[in-house]
Length: 285
Length: 308
Image (cartoon, rainbow over all chains, first blue to last red; front, side, top):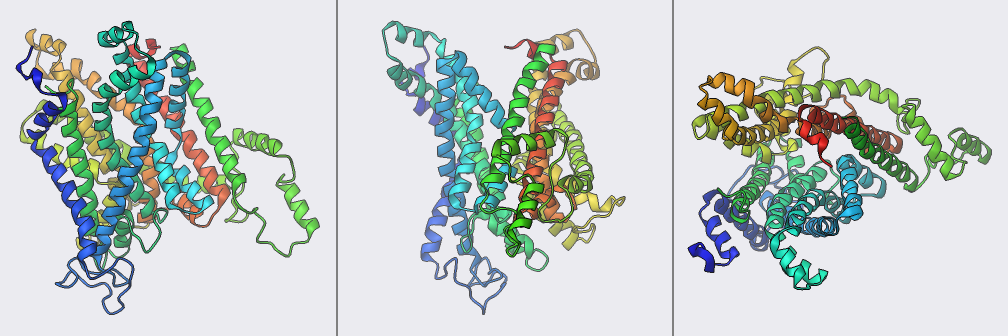
């Protein structure tokens, strides 16, 4: 027995994560951006919607730190609202997709047999559906709405998680401790709650961290095409699109949102890589 | 092998059917009919037009007719571009997509694969760290950010390349779109190849080959290269799908006349048949490419065929 026997798996995972500076930098950056996104719009004298016709397209100055856009709106405030929306969409849609994916994959893996093939063939079929064009079609046909974007993103991104959770459940099912629990006469519900889900949690957390940036990119993609959030609200994708229109004369309108979008996505990536090493014993060397 | 092909087809055909059925359902769920704008049309003429487009038939017959037309490769007429079928638009636009997308995919495979391989061989040196730093950035930056940034740097600031537009036979107009489309995939493929490379190069059979005294070159080319490149084959399917959707962005940012731009313009103008037709086309292409990638993989790696 190893001497670290007394520590809980979570404490050990935290220990391992603490030794990985990139993951900590990622986590810190995300917390910082999240805090700024909440605080800055509350403190700033400007709001994201009101145009200022006397301050159109101003380069960054002391009054407007990140400059203003084509309608004279303060870019800093709009950017922080964009971060709010992108992070919120990313987290909420990921939560939905993780819930669907875990339920789907765990059911397939736990029950097995015909149910398994049916559920997993469905996932195979959905994998080949061209979702981005389909979502564009949906927004065109039924008008764009925040809810639709949300549902669309949630519906696409659970497939990976379902596959991974199913594989993990299959391998867990044949382990000795599950057999022992079954021999003790544990029912299915208790088995899933007490023994299956806790052992799935690590891998689910890892993939949730990797789903969030994918969702943020997808939302930004839709907003870039003008199919995402409504004006005057802006997500990071809208801001990048706005910036791309003015890139010849006012490049800061493009570069600043682009930097923040990249920062968020890179940070989630670093955090996800670190969590994978910390939570997945097979990967840790 | 035959059983494997049949099994994959058993997934591909229902998938295609799902897409087509969805497409048909969407077309019919749209609020308003295609001829609503012609308000002052006499009822008799409207009836005859509807008969001409078979809109007066029961829904199941329309569905079967739609399927039949699709089987013959007919995507129907475009609502927006009068007197033009979706097929003609595809015929005009598709060569652009094939050229730009194909080049981007080739560049990504070649550059990404080489960078990853070098990083795996020269592990923990500058050859590893530097490309991998940029690769982790490149994975994170989406095409719609890369494309305007490339224009900003190479067209607006440096004046080296045109910022958009399209001329057949002039490679200058190709460089930026292809780069923008390829960059995320270069990064992804480089990371993937590096991972596979490290796994293969540290495996026992390579150690045996080294112990036998084989030259490093021989080990790499004869023994290690094939298993290292295997994951690339299975990545081809998703990569192809990614290039297709990426081309929607790249074509609209750079103003290329491909189907991606028709798709987007059609989406904004609510050209239902065009948008749905192109979606079906995209779906069919993605399915075909996934099938092809799977078959290649099974052909290269016999173990895959035997899996249940």
